[in-house]
Image (tube, rainbow, N blue to C red):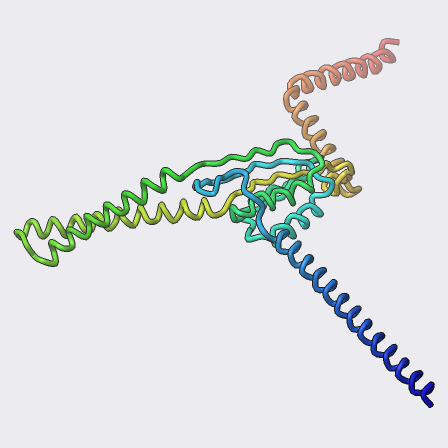
Length: 283
C-alpha cells in the first residue's frame, strides 16, 4: 500500500515539474518573439527616418538643387522604379518630358522633395544609373535674406502701427492725418510684398529640387524609321513626276533650238524629195 502511494506521489511531482518547464519554455519563446518584433520595428523606423543632411548644419536656410544625368538599361523600367521611390517620401514630380532622338530615348524629370529626404531619394535614384554623365549638387544659402526680410517686416509693421495710432487718436492737422492714411496704404503694400517673398523662400527651402536626365541607347531600328512598300511606291511616283517636270522645263528652255532643228530637218527632207522626183524627168 505504502509502495503504491509513493508511486502516485512521484508521478504527480514529475507531472508538475513537466508542466512548469513547459510554461517556462513558452514564456521564453514569447519573449524571443517579442524581441524579434521590436527589432524589426526598430529597423523599420530607422529605414523610414531621414539620414543626416550632409549639405546643411541644421541652422542655415539652404535651397538645394541637383542636376543629374545618367544612362540606364531601360527608360520605362527606370521611370517606374523612380516613381515608386518618390512615393516613399514627401515628394512629387513637377515636370516630365519624354524625348526620342534616335538612337537616344531620353526622359527628363523634375522632382521636388522635402529637404530632410533629399539624400535618401538621391540614394534610391543612384541605383538606376549604369553610367553617370554628371551629378552636380548646388546649395544657395538664404539665411541672411531671411534675417533681412524679417527685420524689415518688423520695422514696417511698427511704423504702420504708429501711423494707425495717429489716425486713431486724430491728433494733428487734416493734412497730417491724410498723409498718415496714405503712408499706411503704402506700408501695407510693402508688407504684403515682403510676406510673399518670405513665403516663397520658405517653400524653396522646405523642398529641394532634383533635375533628372536619364537616357537609353536604342540599338534596334525603331518603327518610325521603317519604310513600308506603300511609302516606296509613293516615293517612286514622286520621283518620276519630278523627272517629267525637269524634262519639260529643259524643253521649254531650248524650244527655239528645237524649232530651228525641225525646220532644217524638214527642209532637207523636202529637198531630197524634189531631187528624187526630178531625176526621171531628165532622162
